[in-house]
Every structure is written in C-alpha cells, then in structure tokens.
Length: 376
Image (cartoon, rainbow, N blue to C red):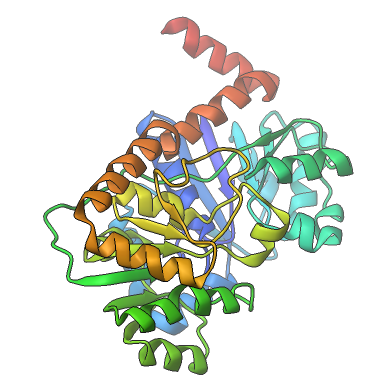
C-alpha cells in the first residue's frame, strides 16, 4: 500500500520528538514492502531552528542517516488533492495547519478513496481544548491517540467515532544496546527545556541529585535558558545542546544511567503517557530512574523495568544505588529490554495500525489487505 504522512517535519527532530516515532513507523512499513513518504510545510518551525542552530549540514546528515525515508515540502499553492490522489492511507499529524486538516477531510468526503487518519500525540486536547475542537475531523476514517485517556477525551467530546489508542514506541532498528562502547560518565539526560512545563522537575530530579552526588554526566537538548545552563554546569554536568536522535543510542552507551522526567501536563492530566525517551532508553539498555508518572495502562513494570523516585531525595538514593550495584543495573537492563522488545517497538505499532486499517479503513484498503492475506 501507499502511505502518505503529513507531519511538522520528518527531517528535523529539533524540539520535535514526534519525528522519532514516525521515522521508525515509516521505516518498518518500507521494510514490509509498502511505500511510505512524508509531506512537511516549507519553513517549519523545527526545521528552521535546526538550520539556525546547526547549519544546513544537519539536513544532509538526516539524508545520509535515513536514505530510505523520503519527504517533500509544500507551500501555500501546493496541490494537496493531487498529492493524495495515489495514496491508500493518509496520516495527518495534529501539528498540521488546521486549514489543511480541513481541506484533506473535504477531499475525502468528495469521494477520495484513501483512508484518512488523524494522529494526535500532544496534550492540547486537554490543555488547549479549543484548538482540537476547532479542527474539522468529521470525514476522517480513523483517529489515533497516543494514550487511552486521550482517546476517551476524543470520544467524550464527540470528535470522532473510530478512535484508537496508538502509543509511541522505540525504533529498535536504531535504538538497541551498543556493548562495544564502554561507559565513560555516570548520568545522562536527553530532553528539551520546554515552555516551563518541567522546570521545577528538572531541578529536583536531575540537577540537584547530580550536584549532591557529585556525578559526572551530560545534558543534551534545546531551548535551555542561560540560567539553566549555568545551574547545570555548577552541578558538574556538561551541557551539550542539540543531539540528532539517531546519535542518542551512542550517547546512552557512554553513560551508566539516565533519568525520565515527563512534562507536567502529562503527569497531571494525561496519565499513562510517558515521553518517547523512556521507550528509547529502555531499548538501549541503560538503567533508568523515573520521576513520578502514573502508568495507567500498564505499559511497563515499575520497579522491575525501571525505578521510580517519588521526589528528589528518592532520586538521589536510587541513582546512588544503581551506580553502585552492578547486579541491579544488569537486572534493570535485561528487564527493560525484554519489555520493549515484547511490546513496544515500531514493528508492534505498525502491526496495530494494519489491524486497525483492516477493520476500519476505506473499502479499497480493506479489500487490498484482504487480498494480500488471502494470497499468504
């Protein structure tokens, strides 16, 4: 089948974690013999900032790293009807401009034969309800929400009928252990500062424990104000700025432990939704200690796959224990990898997507999938 993904950017993951998962999904679809390509707006915020921060070479690096992934940009005069004409499945990410979300729905309602899918991976349905309520989703065949609580919000608000939970996951083609690399430092955190949504938490669960324990370590991410960078340096950690997501497994491998610090809106209003970094870290086999979040959907095994710190004092204690106890580190690594590989890879998510399409896709897609299944 031919899949077309409308997304904020495929090329740039500068403060744009959704690119991680969708790259992995596209890769898996291509590996199965499907066609998958992306469309992104010209001058997207993430891509513009990536070039300003890293230079045009960062785009070249993406194409070298992901040669199988193809994307084109569109502007105001782009012909979206022509773009979707030969697609079987069109997946529209929630950061797509609302006018285009509406236009694609109109094309589908006028007799478009493709299956139209809306994909939500943000907390705006809770924190900025009017933005999602204002979208025109009546002609969308399927809505994918990256957590059950978000799915229920769509159903309760009447924003769609065929709404499914579709969590993010690790692209294990790239996120896996690298045993040939020896750890050099104690602690790493990869995450963006992010609109004051976890300022207090970064201090409590990262900076202060690292300073108190006198840990060596690294912080990677973007949008850190000068004061935050100064505090990181004062804690004895090195601030490295942006890192291409494809380089994160190597960065994890050079450290003995990591932490998971979810944004406050997810902890308070969207239980059951971790950051994608949690999937990726466990897939890479690095011991992880998490700040509090409610695993409402039993995605993982708290205390088995990772440790949970209720507060900064507990984070300090857990980090010290993990760094001192090799047997505990090895057990966390083995259990975390086990859970990811058994439940939370992009391959699992593509399986889920294809199952959804087989029952709720357009007639053409269902017939095509039935034909393939019969031939097998």
